[in-house]
Length: 467
Image (cartoon, rainbow, N blue to C red; front, side, top):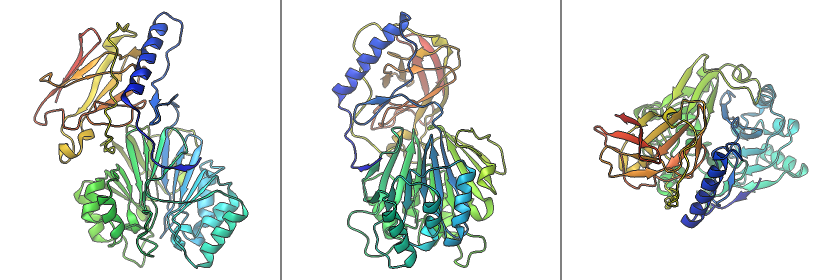
């Protein structure tokens, strides 16, 4: 695992070659020589990797009183962002052990205030740590100095976060540093907090530390996309964070505020709560809801709360039941950053055999009217396909078009396995096992009524859904 700058986008020619290879594999599979492969994830470097079916993401927003601590578990990888106050160190360690954590692959100190790094010493004493990501802001507190000394003593790789850096932890997980910029915002520790955007499939999380004010304004203007369905609200929901412009840009569906019950700071501030409410966000608070768990399969997510993290998911591999004190099943509102390359894969003009029961594939859901301004949120439009049969179906050469037939998308050589769903977004993005992209820069579907028409490779209508 290491930090590096943004990767390059796959050239059209490289993608076409990959598509051709898949078609040849399809032909071999049709003759019984190969078992069905899974849907590949094309990495930005042009490589592909098998998708881990059980590689679900769990994000725990731990109840650590008036402080911050978030744990992300993805397969066998773990990320801990902050660890609360000093007196919460034992509690954080207990929570992590209760969830089956034995190692921290990435430890993030968003900034050196005690309510964020106070419990770090206990974490470092109890778990091996693969790497530390730090804001790089100097601080003379004994707590922070001891934190640095322990990292040095244990020879833990130490990196300073800079806007634009990416972190390689797992090929299916995208971790992008959105702040602080290389030229820091003066010497204010809160403003220079690390802001991370963590994405799995089309689901995006935004972790903001105590960033607010100047940092939020800079992020809106930076050109980096802070859009996220799940937002860890900045600075405990204080009056100095969650500005209207920033929240409008992030447009969260779910907002988690980490704070202590009856805290002396008046958190969360009414203005922050109102701003989040105005954009339609569902607000969770650790002072009232306890630990908040967001579990995602990369295309949708569920939210649960419980007093103790162990009551949510006792092991790394157990799938959570969508029940509990508070549960919300939230459809995705994908707002992936625009990528200036249309990665729709052109198909060579050769006959592609039909594999699987095509009639079992249905248009299971649509969103023709994207939230907000469609022109600013092209990926807010989408069509979902689900395979309700018992056979894996090859979608190569299939088409998806609107009611006017003026816009047509041709599917690359991908398989849709039984019970699985794939979403076709109108805009651009990185192809993976749950998401395909039409590559458009303008809205495709009519808001006042349209039809999605799905045809197989021979031009036969497989399904039609109006909305």
